[in-house]
Length: 254
Image (cartoon, rainbow, N blue to C red; front, side, top):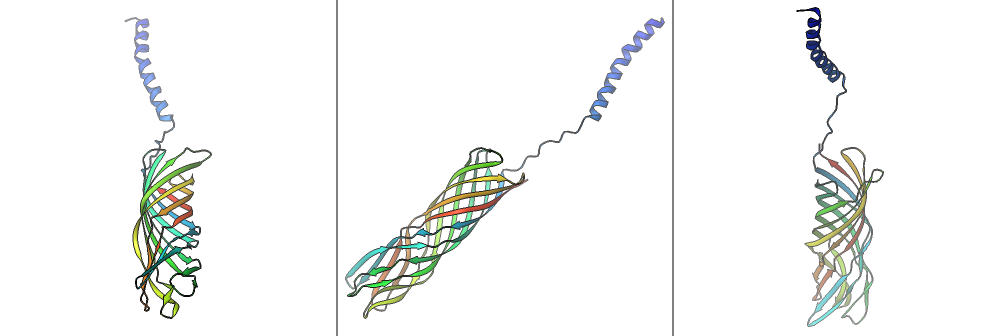
């Protein structure tokens, strides 16, 4: 074999070897590429609500003997705080849903009223408190993120349990107007909610939620009593319309 032939064969063998070695060196020196972490769609949420005062209207019925007198109830749920916890799931970048449980306590006051059926007019102002639990299934539509802020709208369906404390009611007795102790009613009622707000991601896992909620509750019984004078009193409400400001945190699982 001539020298020229030997060089030709050597070059032919070395070229792929050198090329392979270069590829190995390039791969070794290339920066590591980290795969993006993906988080679960499940999240926990906790919220604090500031419930502004809201109207609490209804009907007052007084039965005495064969006489039945009814009159309007005018009252309000005074402002106060309530709290909520829930578990949710994000289906897409725009759609999520959660199931929440909330609790709150509000003072109740009824405006001055005239008790019918008496020879004289009895004016009174009843006051007490009401405890409420709510269970809501809600869906939200995130409307896109701008400068880190994500506005959203939502709606929910569920039930509210209202427990009225016992209260002193004014009614007619044998001697005219008198105060009687009325027993507070408690029951579950259908409710729906409308939500709107804006969210901001504090971290990849933690989101701040600032919003507004309107909660409409079905009417029901509030108080009832049979007085020593023989009068039967039943008070019902038309269901409170509650407006609340919300601040909360959502934590998305790894």
